[in-house]
Length: 201
Image 1 (cartoon, rainbow, N blue to C red):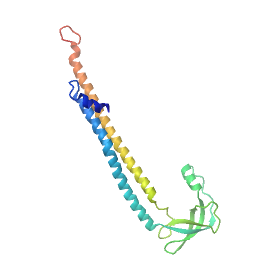
Image 2: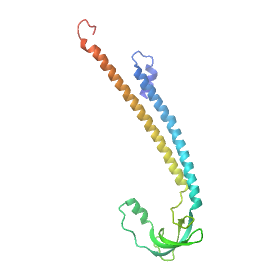
Image 3: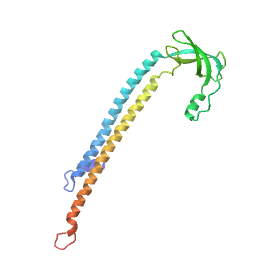
Image 4: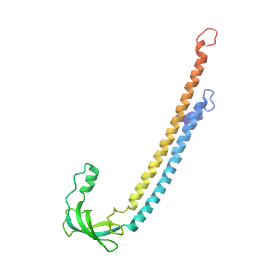
């Protein structure tokens, strides 16, 4: 903001260097892009992502079906998983041998995860299958799709802010280097005569 204020106050000042004006205009452009472009890009990416995810939701709901399954017997737990996230998610379910009827009418059986506190033979639970009765994951819901889309939009906005700020810093770095080079050239011209009588310094 100091650069913007300086642009307005010192734009006609004879001490204002050209690089000062360039730096101020670059700062103004960066603020404008961050305030306008970043939200627009985030909104566009979020909307596109949401549309794509909602299409996936509709497709998954067409081919995935929730069917009742019956526990045949409980299966011993698998070996301990060192990944705490995987282990905690699995601890909420039990591995059971179960049978179920697929949407096409065929009877299927296999080892699946049952969301039961204490599964016993004959207990009923529900699982998701495809058209042929193969066990699949639960379809994505609208709320999860919207959340993912919002995160994608937020990420795009943050990326735009990062790119704009990175570009601004690069331009300012180049301007500072240019100032130093000009100072070195001016000092090379004035340095040998600095402080000598009759040189006007």
